[in-house]
Image (cartoon, rainbow, N blue to C red; front, top):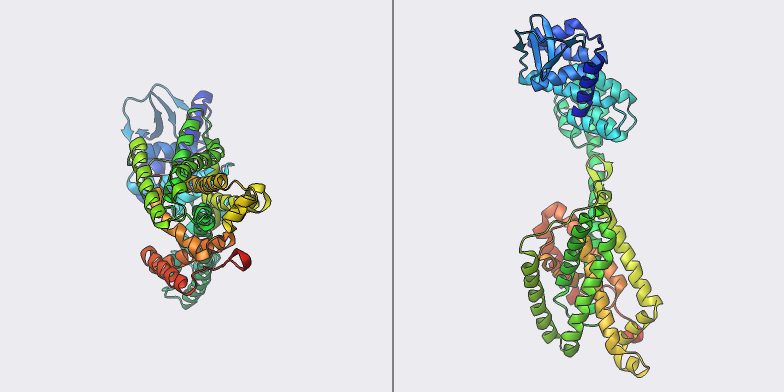
Length: 520
């Protein structure tokens, strides 16, 4: 808006053209009473003259002065006549500032925003519609009505309709109030509820009844939108739990290793994403850093996982307690090492532009792009893991070693190498989980600690060694957490889910999907 007004001003100075602003309206704006000045703003805005926004901006910025009966817009050492747009030279010696009170400034600001509703750029119109929400003045109502009639964008139309309804509900005319109530009744905006609740107390029975009926319609739409939001957040949380648990489903579910350092492998993936982001920013390639961060996070976590398997876990197979204690100690070492290298504070990982914002499904339901991307990413990782385990030679070896290590070794399967590769695969998937989690949460040394328990719950609940069970368990726990949070809060939801898992495992130790036949 400032750039537009500056360009208009410069053009007026350069061309020296006379413009046909209503001289009486300009005089009322400068010298009139409060209500007259407000009315003058409406006249000036409705004139469509390019000098009108320059004049209003000068009023807001304190750059409007009066020399006798002449109103001047001052720009440095130059001035133009507010009524004609003609350049004034030399500047009159005796000038007085035109004072604007808060009410007048607000009306002028609202008028400037309403002028942007006529812009060709959608972003400019959307910003103007948002700026007018709750601050629309009577002076700019005609222009906003015209903009609403010409607007085709649904989001902008909803904002303008809400602003106009706020003004119309205060009208003395019953028909105007009823029209505003009908308009609000078609809205999916939560801001319509308090307006309709207030209108339901109207002394006119017809207006009150219409407001109550519209309120029921709005509340129904809002409930459906809230349900849709809960379903989406449930899928989103389920996909995050799935990413966190997929790697554990291999290292624990298939190999039987209780890896307490799994959360730190997630953390390594997140910090790798942070390092790649900074490297790409230096070469002005920030928007593309996720493309490189995904394989980098997988590789780094996989390398750490394979070193962990070769150096520690290989000597502890068949000894679960010692494995648990050893990997817990390694997790502490990794946390402290990360603090030493990157510091104890969280590090910033930002979304690229194409993962920012979201899809507005309703006024109270926006689906963020970063969450949508994570859901799609989790689905892609799941498909690749299934193909790897069921359609490749390595997957065949992993399944063979899992079912019968001695027999697999007898037929020539290199069991030691398969153990290392399988553990590296599980660790790499944990790194992918860290890369995804960095896009919506804090990245710090303790990142993995918040997911290790949930990851084990997903694997055990779904059934040890069952990837399909891991998927179902992640989605069930995601939905359960979000629906319980909506009714009882996050802390109670966690407690209820944990108690449910404990009771479930006592009744069905094999999980949702138990191994059958010879595999059992």
